[in-house]
Length: 237
Ligand code: CA
Image (cartoon, rainbow, N blue to C red):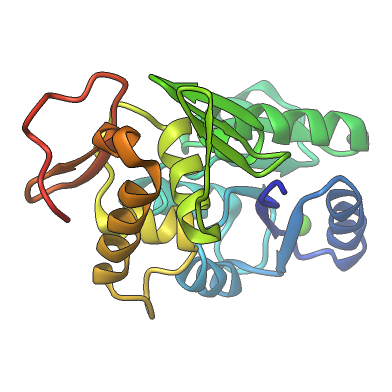
């Protein structure tokens, strides 16, 4: 039961956007289409995408301007951006990458090439959407089979706790704020209260039993999963 990566397509030509969307959907992704920067921003404000396919030539703000803005914003800073463009000139390519794009695809491109590049940026930036089997310390999570085990013993974990654990295990040893977890796990930072995160972390720890010690509270910052928990430093959520 893999989570479908949400891909925002910012493209003013409906035929191209539709072609891309159909191909993404056939390959297990969830495409969302925005025809200009303004509607793209509305989509991002509502739900943070896992990657953005950004056309260079757009009505209103250009792709380069949008890429710069999203890179400067703390909330969208880590979202991979792939620039789509008809231009193949070296200076334009450099300008796109300078603006913060992770990769660059020149139109016309093959579907296979596009999919390969999207998968590559997702593996780097959103591994929970591509990695099906993760281990950390004595914990094992199999996303395809929807199974979790601690030291070889299977555990019962609820659906939200499963998503939370999958995200934490694919981004270990770093602190994630409640806001970041809402964005990346729940896909909604506006209507869900931060307190929700605490509730599910508490349930996750309970479900993991002794393995719950791997999920650490970092006071004033958020949560982190670690393969080497500091003994005795665990706090209640
Ligand atoms: Ca265009």
